[in-house]
Length: 100
Image 1 (tube, helix red, strand yellow):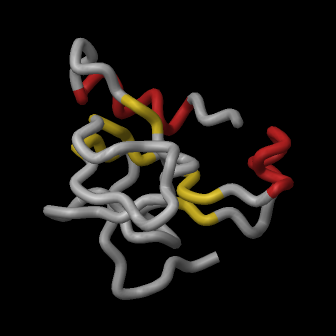
Image 2: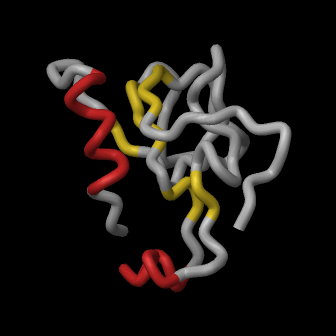
Image 3: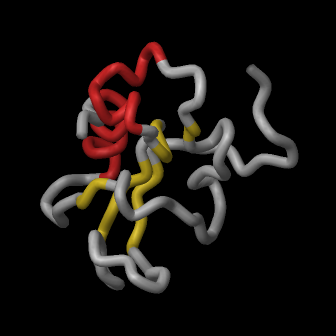
């Protein structure tokens, strides 16, 4: 499977929420969050079988990633990152630990 082009690469991005879309309740402006590798999960992915899914949308591969001044992410799949955790420590966790 080939990525869409042009593409902004980068998963495991950490940043501050600048703006939320209409109806978004999972996250608020000003919160510190991380963008995981799995940027969107279907029902199959969310049932913990994501490694077998042929339709997952990965951040930095099928969805634009975090190597930009601003990035867009699905609020249902980002993770909150406490201020006491450094970005260096938090970023690998967003790739390894996504389970809904």
